Length: 280
Length: 102
Image 1: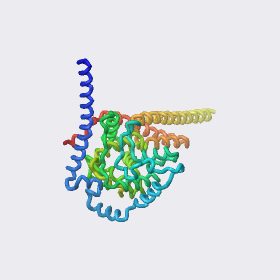
Image 2: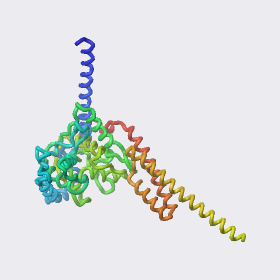
Image 3: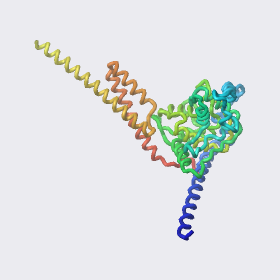
Image 4: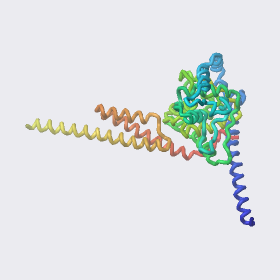
């Protein structure tokens, strides 16, 4: 190998290392700043406490929440979800054939799929399983998706959020950055961003409601919301939030919300899952 | 004879004004739909635009051209605002806000 060729190969190798190191530094830096800011804003609670959302920072609403959790309103969905998990598809297979590690896999999502070049979320993986076995896919906001998700999420309680942005695929960082941009961008007639409410104004009131901190927001979905009278998905909540700022919501499990989920979940790395949750 | 002529003239003036208003409402609805698509293409469509356009079309169908025009204009303006907002936000730096400093 001549000297010039060696130099070129080394230069390319070093630039790849620097890029991948920078990539990891970007994500790690974001996590440090994101978590640091909110933990400083609410110094009396631990990092894990953020998984309880507004009930970690508001004593009076915590009391009613704890009472609700004594007889959790999402128990029916967990039981129905177990029935779905245990039932066979028409072809004789079941969810267990797709999720070889069993139902306790919520902490493996969302994740980057290099082959498909997209973020895969657990609801998407569930529907991919159904489609691969000739079954009708489930709707992504309401209905039975919440049953199977509730069961799988419940089985995954206690697992630690650990989203990775792989360094060997720049498209993964691109998806992460798109999610980050979504979170930062103002939208709708009310011109609000996720950051404006759930970081800058976390703990403040918007009309009668206290704005929950963004840290830990993804750990407890799907969630039973009193407003819905049932369990709903994270993307249903994204959609509702967008509507509340008078922006037209995006499609559940579309690229925008999957990338947002990718970024937002990464920001909660280190926090244990505690879904399904009960919320107002 | 003179009165008949005057009545006919007045009637035709009112009719052409109505036609003009209806066409104007139609044009504004069409403009609003174009602007809606433009805003949507950059992820900037606002929540109520579709509702206003639908209501404008219903109003026009029912002969309420004034209402149709008002709603269509609202949809058009909100679509323009949504597009401008999305284009401005596209320039937002990919940095966490300064208040989230280390």
